[in-house]
View 1 (cartoon, rainbow, N blue to C red):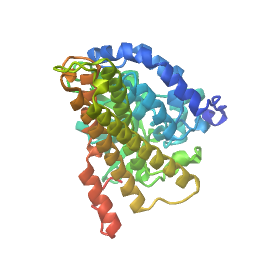
View 2: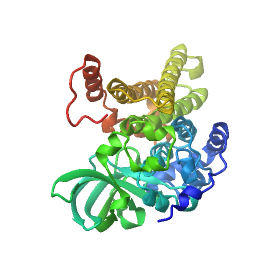
View 3: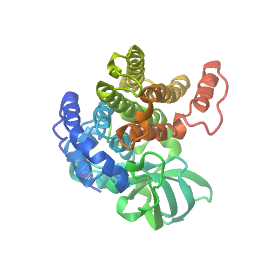
View 4: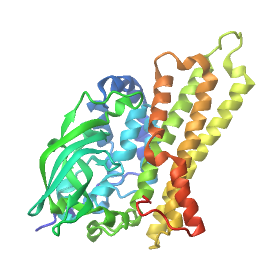
Length: 404
């Protein structure tokens, strides 16, 4: 069949600085809308529309499919500015903004559906063992899906979801596949997201019933893990040669560092005005508060700079046509969790120094809750990742199911 996306003229590509400026200009809007996102259990239609109009979901969309084909580091520099306005929006953008890359891994027919005419696409991922009671069948050239999936971050503004499921093969075996499913096929339980933090992300439960997915909208998971995907027939950029898990880990670490930056802004604004209980002097005259600020700001910068270093190193390594070693893959996974720990610890120190300012409902407690909730992601746990890295450094075998 014809592949219309191959004839798409890539969108006019703005500079990274122009995209960051657009994100910065949205901060007042995001600050106004943030509390409402928590109440509504989703980011608002107004904010979602502005993210798309700004071109943020084109950053990691390939030029072959009409996007900007930029480095992921650009997306996460944009996400950092977004987090200065609203933590929930930063989470959605940092993750879903990467996933046009994932959609570009699928066969050409699937890409033509997702990016028809060079349009952008919001693609979410349901890949982290979030399926519940999932049943699958093979019916001719279609896979049939039934079940429930949790933690569908961004489902309210999504166009597509990439679902990981174990499916039958023609010879009666089982294998893991990614399946692209249109958002409209899901039943969304809008009352399901009742949580301590990340309320505004709307990471709700979703259901599929007798959903028929054509085989061209599927990928073998092992091919994704080994960067041997059919999408490279069209897409030639470096991203399609970077290990999936390496980038995916960083997509979780990215909003955590971004939200820590937002919390730092709130701390600075608060101490400029605050006279602590029992003291007659402004907090800006307290040397210990100044020291806490300086240390936390330095650590948050260090975490963000490690994130930028690693993702740009991945890009440059892939652009040079080099293979990724086991040591590199385990190092990136470990670094992602370490980035998270550094940013989380810095944020905690800032909040502790503010004392009772955490207690009233408002931006401080919301960012504190969101930061801790984001850091609970299974890929952000240091010890499991570090063990894999230690094994790789010593030349020891990794577990068969190690996700690197």
